[in-house]
Image 1 (spheres, protein in one colour):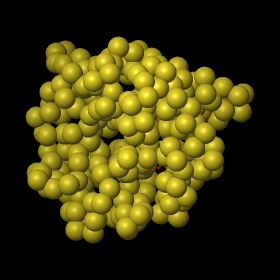
Image 2 (cartoon, rainbow, N blue to C red):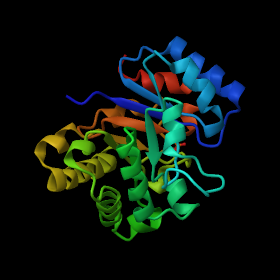
Image 3 (cartoon, helix red, strand yellow):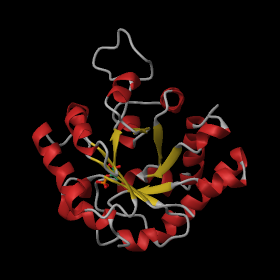
Image 4 (cartoon, helix red, strand yellow):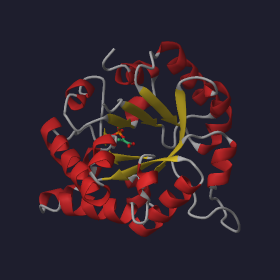
Length: 249
Ligand code: PEP
């Protein structure tokens, strides 16, 4: 039985004060029947960490450096995230891939580094509209998955969540139909089965991301292989995120 996992990616939004307020609102209003994580911007992690400590609300980071320390101006290390009791890190988000040019190779390095230091990983995969329309969605997702998980041990795969986020559905108001999303989720599970085996695949949490809202979360989550959601825009307000966190309350 896979426990639903809802994650909110706040992206480059919210000052420290706004972050603290939103985290408190979620703690007050949520039932935490499902697993829930928020990923504030780096500058808010320290204060939000103090608020979520000892609660059921998990803390995520939106990215991290591919090396532990050193001359990397502007980067944030896995050690700094651990120092703030961050539970998980989102890696390979499409904005990192497409705006900042992160390759599967660099994402794989980050995945292994995060796992090595005991952080959970949300590995994002997903095709662009052009790739979908040319019939390459599965091939693109497979490459991101296989290269992103390269040399990740069977023991560590239990600490990885895969988020399927079709790039054309992120922040656009367009959602993949529940059936189209389900088809790719099943494809991902089968790919993980081919690499790791039946047990690992059946336990893998696969989130859907791309304009998830209170109005579409229930039908998406009703799909067999959709186990959670990675939410951007609708994660920025308690009034829209709480109904998603508690879609099955
Ligand atoms: C995201 O940030 O991963 C995302 C899916 O954004 P949105 O929900 O706004 O489409």
